[in-house]
Length: 402
Ligand code: B12
Ligand code: SF4
Ligand code: SF4
Image (cartoon, rainbow, N blue to C red; front, side, top):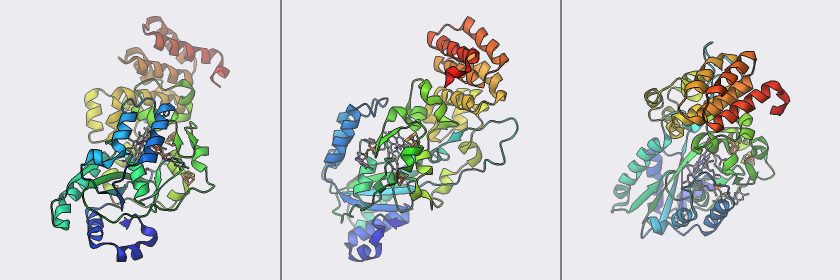
């Protein structure tokens, strides 16, 4: 574990107040990879920027992400009266991709799940660790300590805190880049302790723009600015609607989340196995590259069992099936035609039927034309009929797709 201010860790460690040293040592002991401290002053500028993003529509599709929420979360005193310091904590979740060159078993077609979501839900892993940290603080400090903590789910901007606490710096992909890469999840503990703040790191991306060029859907519309509506992470996890037709091809085989802007980042070249790797790596093959056809055949009970304790549950079964249809359409393997046909004929959710029609249209072939025509006769939902007609049009005029 490294201090967030690792640039001059030894010197700062030597000069740091004993209380701050003890609190950071506790974070090490609990198992966090990085720790930094900042004051409890409000995050005025970050809050204004986030509100601008809401106004500009870049946070559309996340109805809970409101101006009021940002304002409330930007002042730690609103969340913990008497707040004095924020302790920013980072946990490395990097693990290698499972080998793909061996190829999946002959009866499987695999998709791809983002790294953070391949094992136990980090909210759970982190929550256990942060709760342990907060419980032990009074023993280290020698007095009762008021604390309130968040990991992802609260109204605070976790990345803005990590940035000010010197845990890392904002990359152009808007992630926090650290000395151990950007494959870290973040949490913070608000406390009434007077701790010595770390200085923010003086690092930037410089001239690099690899992530902006590599983003499959051009969602990084400016340095540090993500258009949520184009981000594959949003489209496959939070989105409760259809996936816009013009973005489907770019999603490729990703069925939950996206790592492209981190995979290409030079700061991640030396990524090492995370300290919590075992928690994040459970059932590596299947969780990282799930068998797509079997997902289309799942009922709610099978879904609950297969993704118990996993962040993937967030997409809900119908949302995951929608994503799987898109991935199968992009992979284009004709072995998926029977299961996609069953989905088009029988799935209760109109969006899943519509995306199955799109996938069949992408796979194409004479069989597909008769399957789509038969479905069009019985389909009652207009949005699905429209997807079927578009899929049929592509069969007649393949260039329409471009
Ligand atoms: C909403 C949300 C999303 C949304 C929106 C993403 C977004 N850009 O905000 C969606 C669903 C798309 C998403 C995706 C992902 N997320 Co998310 N998400 C959040 C959440 C809940 C809120 C983020 C937020 O407040 N956004 C508002 C915008 C305005 O903030 P921002 O993009 O950070 O903008 C700042 C910068 O632009 C900076 N800035 C201003 N000017 C400039 C200028 C320059 C040059 C630069 C570089 C920066 C900069 O200031 C802005 C304001 O602070 C946080 C948890 C939390 N409570 O904080 C997790 C969080 C940000 N997500 C996280 C993760 C891991 C992801 C994914 C990697 C998951 C995945 N693999 O699919 C992707 C990454 C996508 C990406 N490139 O950002 C982690 C990030 C960890 C890290 N190392 O940074 C967080 C912190 C969760 C956690 N606690 O660990 N996420
Ligand atoms: S997560 Fe994927 S889609 Fe979103 S900004 Fe990064 S590369 Fe683009
Ligand atoms: S790829 Fe380059 S520009 Fe993007 S976050 Fe990493 S260093 Fe910054």
